[in-house]
Amino acid sequence: MRSIKASATENPLEGLDSRALFDAAADAMLLIDEGGSILLANQAFRQMLGYKDARKLIGRSVEMLMPKRYRQSHRQYRRQYAESPAQRAMSHGRNLVIMNGSGQEVPAYIGLSPIRHNGHLLVLATFHFPDSSMISSKVLWENEQRMRLAKSAAGLGVFDFDLLSHDLLCDERIREIWGFEPDEPITYAMLTGCLHPQDLPIRNAAIQHAVNPDSNGEYQVEYRVINRKDRSERWLSTAGKVYFSSGVPVRVVGVVRDISKQKRLERDLRRQQSEMERLVKHQMAVQTAAAIAHEINQPLAAISAYSEVALHALASGQVDTAQLTHALNGCFSQAQRAGNSLHELLAFLQRGDMELETVTFDGLWQELLISLKQDDQHEFELKAEPLQGLPAFSANRTQLLKVLLNLIFNAAEAAHDAGLSPARIIVRAVPDEDGKHVRISVCDNGPGIPADTVSRLFEPFFSTKPNGIGMGLRLSRAMIEGMGGRLWFDETETEHTTFHLTLPRKS
Image (cartoon, rainbow, N blue to C red; front, side):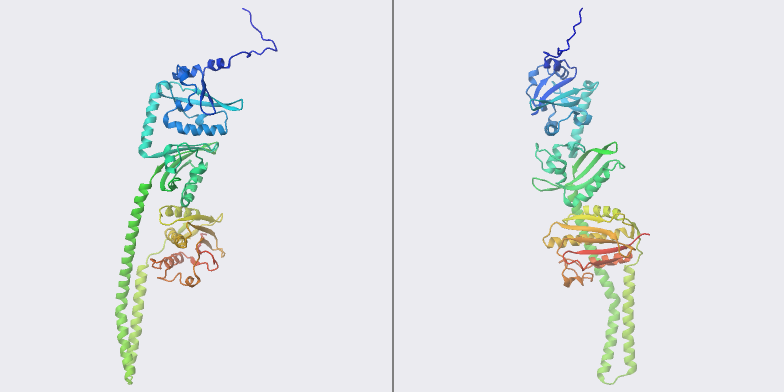
């Protein structure tokens, strides 16, 4: 048998049909145009998937090979791929499924290769089927059906975000919650743009912690989403996982669950608790006033009687020095008795030492955000501006949180009453000028406080609110002073409102 040698000028591929090469390939292949239509399906593909008649494939949309639940997301993926085509695997090497000629789902690895031809983009898709896939496909299909049923029962939405390519895949549940159309392309910025501004700080803090390579990459956070269509507000609980490659975050996968009904129940419960607390405080005030009245009623009655005797003696013109002295001494002793009774009562009401602990601003800020997350009665945007390297300070954490919440809510209510919504509030933290304290300031964009009101801000029972009792600032100042600090209003700020408080640095 003679061997055939090609000359140097002879092209061994000349005259060879490209379709013959395509059909001769052992791997299953499809050639798809930029609109998603199948142009060619090689023999290996037709045999492996059971499509004996090529006419059932040619000219059809490639989405026909996919389960209906994936078709919409694949159209979006295909559009994104057309914008930056490159040779790569679909879905980063995870198993996908395609439909065979009998309508069964078959797991497959899919690789994509772009081809430019006459100014058009063609895509060569290569399919590899895992060993024993035909045996395990039924098990995989059943497992996936179970997962779908569980996901549907729990009302979960699923997202998958590639941090390198910025590809984002979202299921139909997320589109429904956010108010996106079924065919509308979604970017990560579009998702975050629908988050409630008040919830952004705690959500961003959770993400920043998760993308830190030193963390386990997991995060769980609750926030509100404003629907793009009807502007309705929904509370969501999100749990996610960040994946790393060589210490770099490359992918975020997570699920979201609508917890709006639960939040409404919690809100109603908080309102009931708030009403109960208000009633309890009212009863405490009544009982305290009654106790004070009881303690000073008798001394006041005695003072009145002694005074009447003294006045009668003076009016008669016959002053009995001994009698007048006795009356005045009685007035003095009863006044002393009333004063001592009041001091003893106040000491009883205020008894108990305040427990101080070491507090950092970062830890305080996280607790403040968690406390504010439960609030649904105030609209404001909150921002922190702590100085880097701020030292720790000494405080009672619970009472300090109460003081800050009181100042923040006062600012939000004042801005709302002035027609400024939402209020913008900044919490600043710096070392105090004396070098012994840390200063925390609460600043807002509200209308400021009238000059004739400033001098009375910390007076008991003085309030600019229609339903206020005028004790919030008074009690806040008392709590800060009990921690060894000060609380005051910045009178040099004329346009907006700023309160400062100081706390002792922890040496």
